Image (cartoon, rainbow, N blue to C red):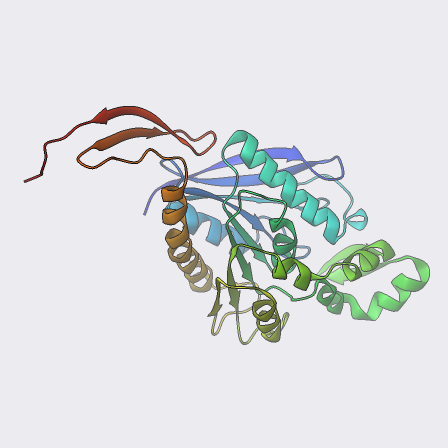
Length: 296
């Protein structure tokens, strides 16, 4: 496994505040870049996000994870955010990678972050692979976390709810926004390879959501059952298993992607020597060498 390094980064979010992220990098030149979206009211530092990012970096994939607006170390008021703003934040994060490193080819989303990553994929042109972990098939699923307060929110415009032991203010605009999104439409036009991870025993987002996502998407699509895992992948082994499977699955596509890009190809009886630049992901030809007719 490679040693990894971490960079703290900041970029402007969809609502004008600065968003804080961590870019997990392999020791050498990254084979690919990935963007990770955390779960509802979570942060970039949740165990699963950290473990998956570190494990992928050890396998040569750089991973950016960040706090959505109003969460963790990022600026903004959570009460003003919604599903649309999360999608916009993901697009901003992808733009940051494209401008400073390389656009992300891999998009990964956990729980509601999985739904957001599916919705954002069409706007991140460089992305070729999408993976979801315990994602709901409909963003409105998240209202189950505060179902007892929905009537109050609709009547008064907002309410304070307790989620994962912390108070959050939810406004009616949040409910209106998630109701307007149809994830099935995004899935039908995804045009990217899809990997769905879901635990059959998930008590937060039932396994039936994975079936609905799978049925709505077109091939190529794959499903991996995380038997025995909980929704947050709180066991280290479960998070590392997801990272291992992601790396193996992605490698199949990344190898083909690299072959199809504008990398110089050797003619018969010719060797191509090229240098890979990190900026735009393209190679720069440095020398062509005509070898002997055969190798011993």
